[in-house]
Image 1 (cartoon, helix red, strand yellow):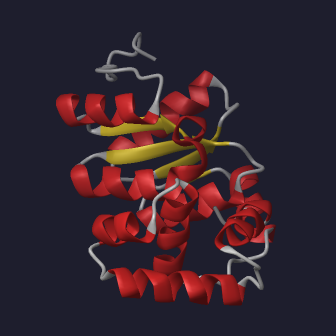
Image 2 (spheres, one colour):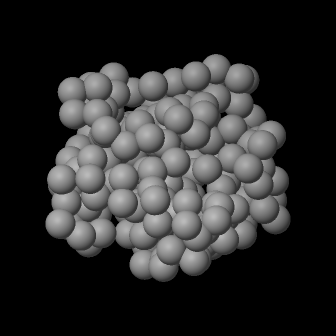
Length: 181
């Protein structure tokens, strides 16, 4: 990609944390992010990137079997969403289109997102469950989302009820199995 006259690669990263630090340093016009780097916490990481770099357009590369990632990408306002295995020419065209302010959505990735059962959780409940899945206790979730600890406990109770889960761990398992996390 760096061989293209109109595209300058300003950073590369091997982890989500490294990518976030590199993006904050380089302040790129477009960040190409592999969803595999984000792991199971794509929604939270994408939202953080969007808040930290509002001027940066995101082009996310995701597998077709990751409906939750595709939905999280759309909710977070990414400029583009492509399959991880697209040819280089398609990726380069995608970077150009997203840089120009366009929106690019891979039909194969989107089909998986549309065909998957939608989550019964609200956006806030999904954020709470995502942080719980990362191992955060209710106090840590409250601090991260600027909520009262009691509000987080209420969200966790609502989540387990909606998912008919026996516990928080069971709710996380159910959400992951359905592609909601």
